Amino acid sequence: MQSELKHFYHAELAAAHKAEELGNFPKAFTHLERAHILSQRFALAHAATHLRMLRLGWRTHDFREVLGQLTRAIAALLFSRIWVPIGNTGRANVSPFEPMPLPEDLAHVLKKVSDQ
Image (cartoon, rainbow, N blue to C red; front, side):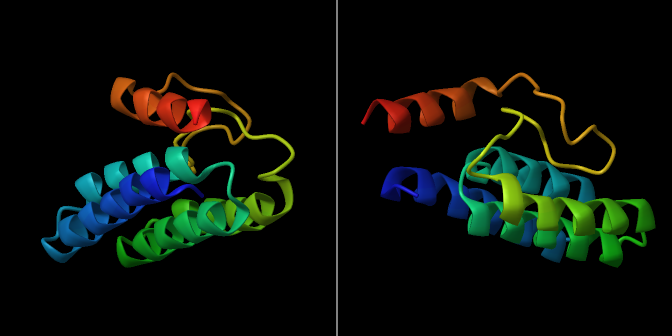
């Protein structure tokens, strides 16, 4: 992962951590979704993001999320370099195969990094 992309990825993880510490779990999930979008093409970071979602699902007693993230973490390790649905938020409440629109700011970051 290039340093600029890594910077944005880690910023989203830090924001998720802060939101979780404050008990704002929806906001924490939103930041993890954004981290997921940034990490999709990098197997270890991608899987780590799913594991963070799994942990947050466990903390919020959302067992659908826990089960969904367990399977997605394994799939991330196996398929990240082959194919990913661009823009997919990675949550258990969406199809793991469905591409989704990229948030404008993340699209800009991903384009800038891919142009380098």
